[in-house]
Amino acid sequence: MTIMSDNWIAKKAKEDKIIEPFESSQVRKGKISFGLSSYGYDARVADEFKIFTNVNNALVDPKDFNNEGFVERQADTCIIPPNSFVLARTVEYFRIPRDVLVVCLGKSTYARCGIIVNVTPLEPEWEGHVTLEFSNTSPLPAKIYANEGACQFLFFRGEEPPRQSYADKKGKYMKQKGVTLPRL
Image 1 (cartoon, rainbow, N blue to C red):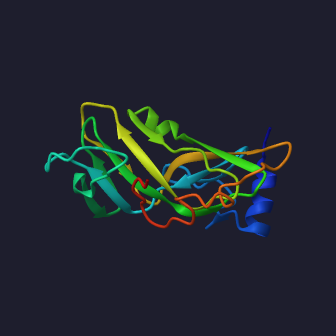
Image 2: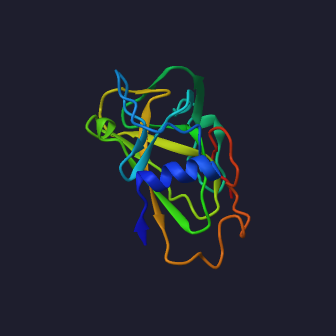
């Protein structure tokens, strides 16, 4: 498996629209950086948030997920309660090639504040907005900023295409738009 460079990412973004919208360089001025980097792409968090709260004593059950545990907000910033989490999505829409697996890591700016970004790998031929989970591991409220950098996606090309892609198996999160909750 080979990690793909900024040259490959830019070419695929232009030719195959693997990332839309696409920022061809790092944007920083007064913002948490986003855009193309040496061996990855720093994606932005959109302004749609689902903030976890336990006001209704909801149980978190991945097989029977109850939306009552969330408060929905659309805003330029989001406050994550202490020791809690927020679901959000990327501004960017991704289309992953058949021979590529994408891994996501959180931005160091957030990690240094105790805010952890979690994303499962983007499988070959998956497409959609990526649902992001921001965990506030600190005992204090934490702020995240919409339309600014949230995480970095690293593109790994396999030596050969997989026997079965995400599209082939008709994955349940294919072409998701907006913040997507767990599905069974």
